[in-house]
Structure formats: C-alpha cells, structure tokens
Length: 298
Image 1 (cartoon, rainbow, N blue to C red):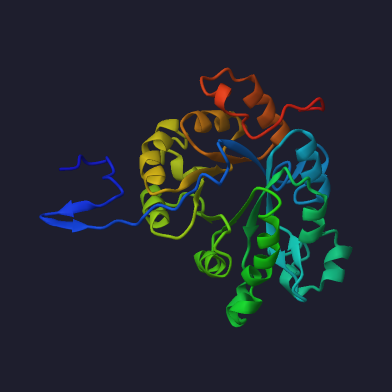
Image 2: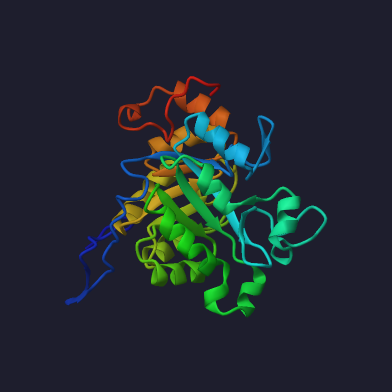
C-alpha cells in the first residue's frame, strides 16, 4: 500500500490485482543541463531595469554581459506574420500587436525575434514564451503563432540551449507534433492550484512545468515556503519533468533553488545576481545559479 503523499514507482501501480500502467517519463536532462539555472525575465526583468526597457535588445545583451546564461523572451506575431518580442497584447494606445504590420512594429520600437537570436550569444539559453493571438483561432494551424515559431525554434535548438513555453497547451501539442526535438514547457498562471498543475503536466507531452510562484504561496500569509517546492518535486521529477518557478522575489529565488527547483525566472536581474552570489549554500559547489561571474556591474 502506498502512503498518502508518496508517489508510486513510475513503472506502474496496482489496483487490486490488476496492474495499471503509468506514462513513461520523457528524458529531460537536456533541459537546463545539470542545472539549476536562473533565467532573466524579459531580459533584465519586468519594466525598466538599469535604464533598459523589458524585451529590448539592450535588456537581453546587458543580461548576457552580466553573466546570465538564460533569458526569457515573449513572442507574438504581427499582422503580416513576423515574430516580434512583446509581452503585452496591445500597445499603450490600445492597438493590438497582431493588428500592425512589422514596419509599424519597428517604428514603435518592437524587437524582432530574428534580431534577438542574431545578436544574443549562442551560449546564452533562450526561453521563448509563446503568446497565441486570439485570432489564431480563426487561422489554419499552419498560420498560427505556434506555426510561425516552429522553424525558428527548430533552428535555434541546434545552436543554443532552448525552451519553448506557453500558457496555451494546444500550441505546445502542435509544436510537439511538428518538431519533436523541441524542449517544451507548460506555464500556469497566478495561484493555479498546485495539485492540478503537477497532475496535468505529468500527462502532457512537455519537459518542464512552469509554475507561477503564487501557486507555492500560503493562501493566508502569501509567503512562499521552500518546503512546498520540496514536497512537490518527487511528483514532478517522478513524472520525468523539470520544475521552473517564475517571478519569485529576488530574495526568494535562492531558497527555491536550494529546495530543489530546477530553474527560476527572475525580475531585477542585477539584484537577484547580487543576492545569489552572496549566499553561502551547500549546493553552490554544484551550480552556477545560471550565471557566469562577470567583471562588470552585477
């Protein structure tokens, strides 16, 4: 009899005298390498950090110069099917990114995805957060945002560490069918129930579960307990998946990594590096916290 809270072996479990097969875990060692890693959210972080606006080429190249080995970029499409790096669906004036042609996106200062991959050093890993447009629902599968991203991601995975993540499970499913070699991650939103997230991810054909830090917070106090991460890991890792936590406070990132998270996506990258670099923890010898030490301002 299996104790409550202890996952059964992945080779199968029993129900009475009948063996019930379980899904075989996907090999995920390729994602994050030996890990764990720290990923720069939208480059240096959400908003403006050290004078660099999120999702701009300067934000990404500055993060790389500080020693970050992974960054995260939001990917959308324009009306003429060019992929750009933008988090919000609309510009400040209310115009949708998906309604403008790339020349107008350029005029507004929106970074093209191809410009990013051309200028970001190949040693820097890239987490591409795929943002499906609402009118992808009216397009054939071959013209959705996911379809546009597939060949770009397939080329990049051959030259750099890469992960494609999305809140859209259908987009991830389509990418898996088209490009089986792509590492994929399913993102869950703020306060998504932890049990449901882990159970669902275990039976999706993805490599990484991307939990918002709110799923790990105590409902009353809002504090994030590393013990919650440690309690979930036997299930996440037992299913052959990696755990990525996005948007923890810089002060919490190190504790989550020490608890066993495989990756954290952080804002305020310089501050996060400062805090992580000052921590004297038992696992520092086996990890680089996702960054190379740099002679520049950290």
